[in-house]
Length: 479
Image 1 (tube, rainbow, N blue to C red):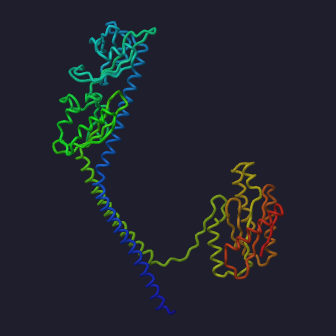
Image 2 (tube, rainbow, N blue to C red; image 1 turned 90 degrees about the vertical axis):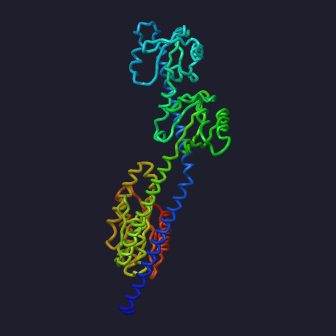
């Protein structure tokens, strides 16, 4: 083959490689375009499902937060009830100083005496003897009341109360009052609440925790009754679900804006938590996702184009063959894979100089060393074994860690079998000098023209087991 023909063949090979790379790049770009188009369609169809999922999570978050807050406040009231003074009108009771620390919190605190007079921290009093929650707390219950209409400065609210017990006798109650709007603030502080809201109501529809705008409705059902529904029976189903303690989803429209709601029973009395969201914000989010996806697609195409150019350039360059030698991190000798590459390369080329032999080495009782002295000592033994082998072999020989406590030496420097046996004796003598490390060697001599790496290693392995059967510090040869 002359130089011109060689160049022609090289160009053809180069062209085929370039065409293959270009085809792969084109397919990748087409795949990216298809995936983005598919994603656009899926975003639309999955919007409702994602919204419902977010609503459910928001509902669970609100329920968890409300339950936790009520539980914490009841426990706080129990602590105060354990040591508080009964109100005497002096204004010097010890609980007034404690409550002063919480003056920035949005609640009213008071102590009720046995006659039903509730003394507030601000100094005013009110008769609560006829209230259901007071009568229950005086019977020893820890109470979270139903919604009390217009009891809190013309606002609806809820009372938490625990009994004050002295000498096994109930002598009063510690009370904490929240308006429904104040309770609503605690469950409407998440990011999702910016595009929706949470509210809590009982089975009759009385709102326990609200948000601004609900004051004009007596119940949550009154508010929902004024909304538009595309399907019939939505409100009736919601009422039935609430009555039976079931969760569910619903869709309604207000001023032509779609609202999605999720409702689920709370772990408090007979309350239900309802979460709603206006989908306008989600449409905005979808538009942003589309924009980002388009930008991502363009960026991906540009990146693939750059990769294509670089790949074509790299493919066009003739690279010289390099031998990458990898070393075992612990012992510093070659890894099994790196040694195999080097040896197989020589075998393929019919390397006949010297009497090529494979010495397979195994450390005797290595597990016992690990178990007796620890793995750190075992590592040091492996390191020392690698150092001994490197000292014993010559420059043209190859030593590697085959795995675990096994090492492999490929001998090329020896000219005769006697020289290989002398090398084996040197290795055994070096290990005997350590007083601790004992090894056995299996030696396989390479036949003339033999190129099968695995068969040579197999014979060396068989020779190793032959040596082990003879005892420690032995070697055996197989041709």
